[in-house]
Length: 410
Image (cartoon, rainbow, N blue to C red):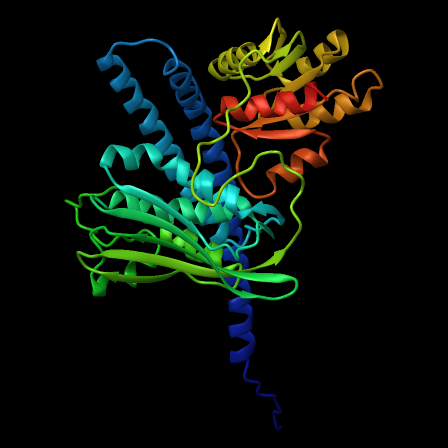
C-alpha cells in the first residue's frame, strides 16, 4: 500500500505568526508603560504641586537673608524635579508616537522676548551678556506650536547658560527663505562657553547621554533635553545641528518652515530686542464671586483656596472632597465657577462635570479642570467631558489669575 503525503514548508508562516505575537506583546508592554507613566505623573506631581505652590507664596513674604536663601533652594529644587519629570514624560510620549504638534498663532517677536527674559536674572548674576537678534525680514506672526518651539529654545539657552562662564549668549532669529504663504526661519543659540569636543558632538543628541557621563561629572541633568528637542524638530521635518570648538563656544541651530499668518490685534508693542515682561494682573483684581473647589488632597485644597483668595477679593469659597459632593454642592449653591480636580474618590472630575452639564440649573457654570496629569489627550478629554478650561499642577498663580479673569469677568 502506497502512502501519499504533502510536504509544506511552514517556516515563513511561523515567522509571520511569531512577528505578530511579538508585535502584540510589544504593544501591550507599551500600553502598560503609558498607563504607569500617567499614574506616576499624577502621584509625583500632586505633592510637588504643594511644594512649588507654597514656596512660591512664601517667597513673597518677609524673611531674613538665610531663610530666604534656604527657601529659594527648596523652590528651585522642586522646579528642577518637575522639569525632570516633564522631560521623561515627553520622551515617553514621543517614543510611543503619542505626541502631536498644535497649530496656533505665534508672535515670534513676543515669544523671543519672553524666552530671553527667563534668563535675564541668571545672566546678570553670572555677568554674561544676553543678546537677542531678530532679522527685520522675519514675519511677526506664524502658524505653529508655540509651546514646543519655546521648549526647544529654552532647552538650548538653558544649556548655553549652564556651560558659559564669560562673554555672551545670543538667540538669533533669521528668515532664510520666503514664499507667498510660508517663511523658512533659522533659530540659533550661540555662546562663548566651554564648547564640545569633536568625539562628543554626536553622542550628546542620544537619549540619557551627556558629553561628560562619568560619576564625577560637574553638570547635572537627565541627558534628555537635546534628544527631545531633536525628536520634536523631526516632527517638523527639521533637525538640530551643532557647530562647536572645544574651549571656544558652541552654536546650536535649526531651520523650520512655517505658514505665515496675519497677527491678531494686540495692544502690547514688543521690540525686536529684549524687553521686560508686561506686568500681570494685580492680586484681588476680581471681586465678590462664589467659587466651588473640588479637590481630595488636603494640601492642594489649601493651596487652591489660598491662591483663589489672593486673586478674588471677598470670595465665597465652597469645598468638596469628591466628585459626588461637587455635583450636589453645585446644585445647592450655584457657584460662579468650579475648579475641578480629575482623580477623586467616589466620583472623578470627568463624571462629575458630565452630571453638572445635565442639570439646567448648573449647565452654564464654567468648570475648570485642575489636574496633575500631563499626558497627550488630557486637555481634549477634559473638553469632551464638558469642562470649560484646563490648568495643570503645580498651579501657577498668574495662570490661575488669567483663567479666573477670563471666565468670571466675561
